[in-house]
Image 1 (cartoon, rainbow, N blue to C red):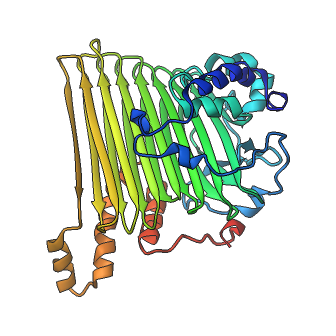
Image 2 (cartoon, rainbow, N blue to C red; image 1 turned 180 degrees about the horizontal axis):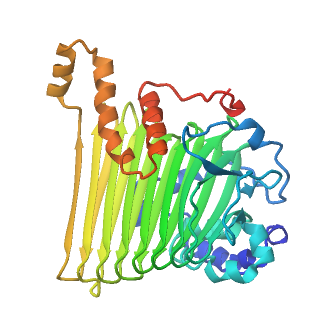
Length: 431
């Protein structure tokens, strides 16, 4: 049934993924990279699966109005795991650029998809990647030819829509050829108050002298569980900006594996999470320096309130051949209550002797002196707390290159700290 509704390049590695998953099983806390999230518990509930590809009744272009002011984007939708094809944005992409259903491109251009699909996301190394690979039937395919630059940001809204509790297995494949440039904004939203479990695997291939900016924003609800694995491969002199923002969620587990394959490449990997109630956010990163003269920069920040749990585990691996490496890894966290918990584990594993690498982590509370100073000047305690948290988290937001997106996120972050989920004018999903 799964193979019947998917193209050959996706089916070609499905059996191997199934065998790899059977060998590994769901990762327990004894697995190093999963020790801060109980994966068994996440997959215990009885979820439905849309393996027969039944049509989901929703018109996102009619219902969705969450635009970023002053940011002109090419807007696409993925409903659960299916690329929405009944309507397309009116904007015109440069010649040769593909933004389409992964399953459709795999059926019409099988050689292109087969060349890249599953090459980074190795099923023998990660059980959740194996599970996603054996179940995935569709998702998003982006291809940007050599030296082509997409001037307009590509916005992809992942909408969770179902009348029953549902498990979604979404796949994303991004290929930027030599000298290509593209900026993406991925937004996760939920249209229904159901229990959702999403596994997502993103593979991004960034060619020589290419530039990729990938911004991922999650604003769902407490019943949503998201497990996302991102794999990025960089060639010589390429640039990658990866930003992951969790504004509202239930349980989120993000994994990033980035590998340098060519000299002179550089990456900026940033993330922030705002949590309260019983929310859980676990970010796990691995930056693999395999060649000389590459730079990596990481900054992750958390603000935890009530009974929230946060986790950050980041490893920078510098291999023997990767001389002249520069790396900075920073994790900073604010814990506002005695019942919130933060687990942090920044790591360096270095086999080269001519490098500049540093890492650090802090966990603390709000500055009492700053709180007292603000209250002395007529700012009440609640407002002073919000302003300090807002200033703390905005260091991550300010790393983004798109000014309209930064301004929008500043507004959303402020609303989040004020306990107000942002309602968008004219958006039926927000009503």
